[in-house]
Image (cartoon, rainbow, N blue to C red; front, side, top):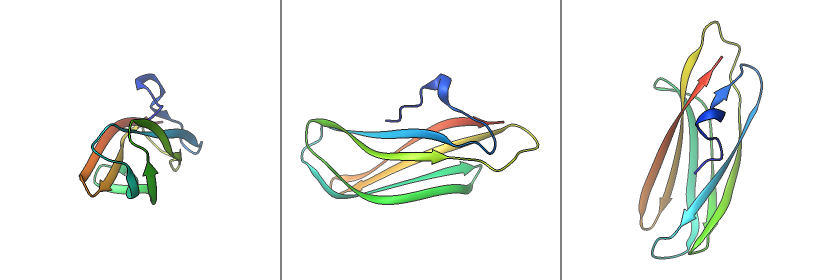
Length: 102
């Protein structure tokens, strides 16, 4: 989950946009040392990204990251996509959200 609702998915070129990432762990077990990664895509090109290890208790919603998204100056509006990926012993999970940059 991210805290940027549909109305908050606009990036202004050159200005940082803070996005909190939360993990809802209602699976079969706790997560220890899970692999979390993210990337901001412009088409198929990654323009930003990062990774970390995370822990999440069972039956909780945990804040696992605070991202700072920023784009270079643009000559035209662009559609970007934020991709979040979690890898655990139970499997790999991925979510995507569209953002617009001006």
